[in-house]
Amino acid sequence: METRFWHKNYDYNVPTTVRYPKIPIHELVHTAASVTPNKPATTIYGTEITFSDLRRQIVRMANAISGLGVKKGDRVGVHLPNCPQYIIAYYAAMSVGAIVVNLNPMYTTEELKGLSENTGINTLFTFDMVLPNIRPLCEVVEIKNVVVTRITDYVNGFEVSTPEELELEKGWHHFSRLLEQSTNTVPPRVEVTPQDPALIQFTGGTTGLPKGAVLTHRNILSATMHANLWGAHLNSMTPVHERNVLALLPFFHVYGDIVVLNWAMFNCATQILVPRFDIEEIMGILEMIPRIQFFPAVPTMISAILNHPKAESLELDKKFGLLNSGGAPCPVSLIERARDLNICFGEGWGMSETAAMGIANPNMGLKKPGSIGIPIPDNDIKLVDPGDGVTEVKQGERGELLITGPQVMSGYWNNPEETANQLKDGWLYTGDVAVQDEDGYVYLVDRTKDMIIASGYNIYPREIDEVLYRHPKVSEAAAVGIPDEYRGETIKAFITLKQGETATEEEIIDFCKDKLAAYKRPKIVEFRDDIPKSAVGKVLRKNLRAEEVAKQEKE
Image 1: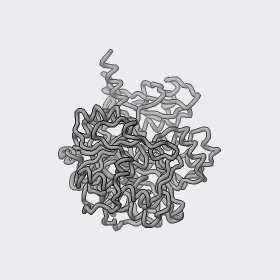
Image 2: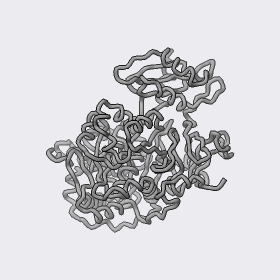
Image 3: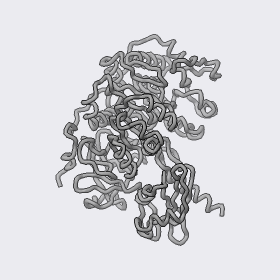
Image 4: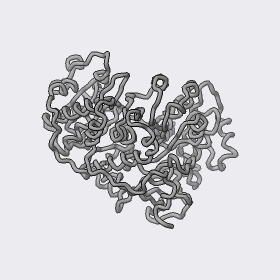
């Protein structure tokens, strides 16, 4: 079979190979500010900052941290939700050649300690609400520069906070004050090449400390180009002054970093910043905004919006140019719900290690519900036997997904052993089990680590989830293998029901009878108000399994 045979299914205007700009990521800021200086780059609760003003603040902050001794190769932690301060800190750090370390604001002191020590952060941008975690962190880890802000410091109508009001420790810096005192608007003269590391993006490890994927400027720029070209029809038909993106995905996650933050900068799109996901707040924002060109999200966000009582009256089909799902597998029932509402919908797959990009469904070409799509430009994939990690499986057979492309990370930070485990001869071993059909479309079956082995059978929990999602009363579902003396593992389903619905364990199990083989059916069902998820809505099966193991140990 010829290589890259899936190219025949690309949209009419998507190239099969790309010439990537040979610039560092922060140059995107200068391009956007030169092309559309007076257009709003960001808006948060009605307060706008133009591209020109944003560039000026980024350059001044770059000079400010340079004055604090931050130099090329240093690690700068950005520990903020979506707000203008995040964007300024991110591009300022890169402008001096530093490496941004993305930190989830929800991390505990213990988690922050492990990641700070692992990366050797010497500067940290953070905010007032998490200082109860930062103060004890700084007692055990030496961080030379701590810069603190309050999110509302960039919202008109609120008083800008002061260092005294935030009770900053001696030697700490106040974001707005630091910026105010830096008047130098000449960009730092630091040579940064596309091959230089730009970002350390932590992945949700199943055990121990998360691994830090090192993404170079070239990795991020390649992924940004991929995101831009894959949705090229959207931009070619949207005038620059109308381009915008709903920035609901957190920037500290790789999906938000590439497909919102850098995509917007590349396309001169206004970012409508949303610091947290609150469904009523989101529906209120959607009521006020007449048009959102691009809205990337994760399935849990999409489900909450499309199943909200206001979803139909808001005429979302008029508001969304393209609603895109990623970050976690999207149930077919949710894709059908979007179609029923006449919403233009896309789905793709990526990882922290692939800078969020890798495989996606065409927007105007052949779409296959349930498939994550076909490899994007300049990417190759192969499926290998999970047992030996080498033998390629036949078409239609299950295998571990391997991928190679210009956006694939250079390795894991300070972790040569894991780098050697997952990167071999340029191929990234993803840990995802998949099937590829005759048109090149890839179907994720599950994670190799999530596989359930019951009575000798290999069972993929996602297959069970898909059936449970089809039950009319089910809002969310997660199947997990729990230890069982007789079968090795037995299948337990965790279910959240739609508002106002009630159901019994027997009802759920009966529903699966004609849809799943006996060995794949859940044997136990637990109803919950919510199912544990990561910051971007990925179900944390390992947490559910750990709870069950702990319960059994107590008995």
